[in-house]
Structures are given as structure tokens and as C-alpha cells.
Length: 238
Ligand SMILES: Nc1nc2c(ncn2[C@@H]2O[C@H](COP(=O)(O)OP(=O)(O)O)[C@@H](O)[C@H]2O)c(=O)[nH]1
Ligand SMILES: [Mg+2]
Image (cartoon, rainbow, N blue to C red; front, side):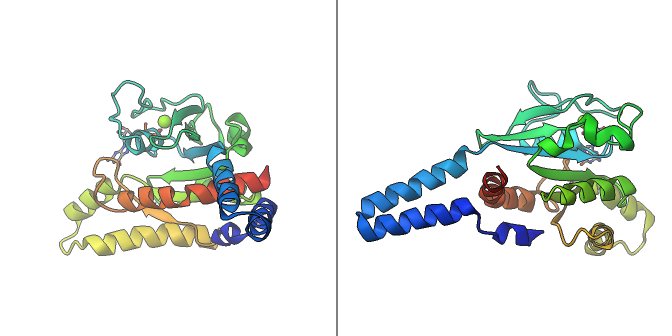
């Protein structure tokens, strides 16, 4: 899937030609202007990121921590032990004006059955996806991943609530080894995706309650780094 990002779009080629021509026939200032124009076009693209996954997996909490908000703060996404998200709701990305994080209802509740979920939440309108799962890799996760791949879009896989797994293992095992536990969880996710033909998407293990631990810092860094690629891709598909 990462290979998709290596594609050079027609827009890229056109922009590169214009820059080349400007360098050959015009001034350096003109070429610099063309480069700026192209970068602006990318930064102006609207990117809609859907946070999806099973009900209760921690999607809304995850959006709040990405935005640097607590669950009970004003403008935060409602969270809770029962399904609190009944309608796809957009939240502004904390840094990027043109990026929206969409909090989706959970797949697999009485109101959002797997058979009708994709249509109910308008799944094909989003540009990029984050599938959140708090448990072992499940059939709903596979189906979401498959659908995203069919649409030739990409996703990150977030395995949430790692704090609960670590606590449980600590209580249960005499020879508790944190690295080994994390490795097992990661392997379950990676193999689950690979066995269902989803290649090697990026898997992040996170706890929204213990942000500095595990992969949350890496996830934020990766997202920051890859946002322009995701936007380029939207330009390409437009
Ligand atoms: N232990 C733990 N609980 C979490 C974490 N993230 C969310 N939760 C809890 O899981 C429940 C469901 O969270 P919510 O964000 O509403 O899930 P959603 O239905 O996927 O939007 C809430 O009680 C949260 O407090 C986490 O990282 N660790
Ligand atoms: Mg929710």
C-alpha cells in the first residue's frame, strides 16, 4: 500500500514541467514562484480522515487526545461505556486548517450493523482512514480494511487500550515481559491484516490514557510527515 504513495501524479509531472520550463526560459524567481504555487495547491487540499472501527474501541477518545483535549472538555468528542456517537462528526485537526478528523459511529451496534454500516456512514467519501481496534484482530476490522483497499485508499491500524492489556498480563503472569507482550499484540494485528491480503499497513499500539508510552508519539510524527502525501493522493484522485 505504501507503494501507492510512490506514484507520480499527472499534476506532479505538469508542475515539474512548468518548473523546468521556468528554469530554462525564465528566471529563478519565476521557477521559485511555480514551486510555491504547487506547494500551495497541495496545502489547500481538504483532507477528510475517518476514524473507524468497532463500537467502544476508543475512537472518540483517540480523536480527543489527537486534538490535545480531555474527554469532558468543551468541544471534545463524546465518549463512554455505551455507544455515544450516532452520527459521523467532524473535528478540526489541531494544526492543519484543511484537515478534518471524522468521528464515526462504531461498526457492529444495533443501529450500525456491519451489512449497512459502510453506506450509513458514507464510507467512500473519506480520503484516509484510521481503523481503531481494542481487541484481537476481528472480522469487522478485516472487512473495513478490505473496503478501504478496494477504494484504493489507505489506512493506519491503531490497536488501542494497550494499558489494559499490559495491566492484565502483569497480574496474570509471573514472568511478565512488556516487550514480549507488545510484540505479540503487534504480531496479531500485522498477521491478521497480512493473512487477509492487506499487505503491511502501519500498525500503532497506543493507550489514550498513557500517551507517552507505546506508539502514540510515533503515530503523531508519522501523520505529520505523511499528511502532504495523503493530500497529493487526493489531488491525484480528484
Ligand atoms: N483503558 C483504556 N480505556 C480506554 C482507552 N480509550 C478509550 N477507553 C475507554 O473505552 C470506552 C469507549 O471509548 P470511546 O472513545 O467512547 O469509544 P468509541 O465507541 O470507539 O468512540 C470509554 O469508557 C473510554 O474511557 C484507552 O486507551 N485505555
Ligand atoms: Mg464514539
